[in-house]
Amino acid sequence: MTKQKTSDFKPEDFENLKLQLAKLTEEHAALIETAKRSAADLQNFRRRVDEEREGLKIFANVELIKSLFPTVDNLKRAFAHLPENLKDDEWVKGIQAIEKQLIDTLTSLGLEEIKTVGEKFNPNLHEAVMQGSGEKDIIIQEFEKGFAFKGMAIKPAKVQVGSGAQ
Image 1 (cartoon, one colour):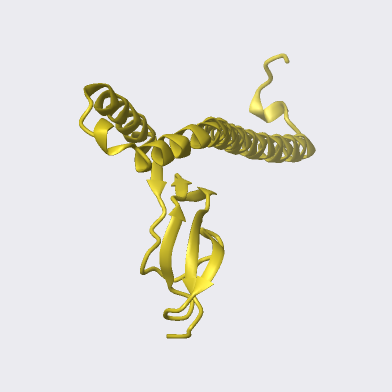
Image 2: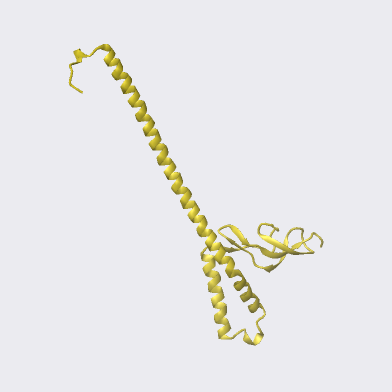
């Protein structure tokens, strides 16, 4: 654009410049708004990806922990039926220490035992395998421990529930 004196401009030139300026200002505002929206979309995307990644980690941990339950249950059953003459055996104590270490490690990762005896029966946490005399819907005996991981029940406790008959 060549330099012109202000006096060389006609009034309609000023009007055209005002219209161009208004149009450019509007386009600029729209581009700013688009940039803000894109930044917010990117931030939301990153948050969703992080949440999904955390969910996948939890899922992988749950599957690993579930695969260890039969081993833990079998160790508990074996120790419950340990002959008297082996209870003080150092080798047996070593195996019991290993079992405790395994449970402690799983607990440190977020595994929690589900409370049972004396608690109100909750079908999300407990599996009733028997009913017996006792207060209605109160757990009176535990047959097999249940576990939750990060607040989610992954192995319901097998329990006996009171029927309401005393």
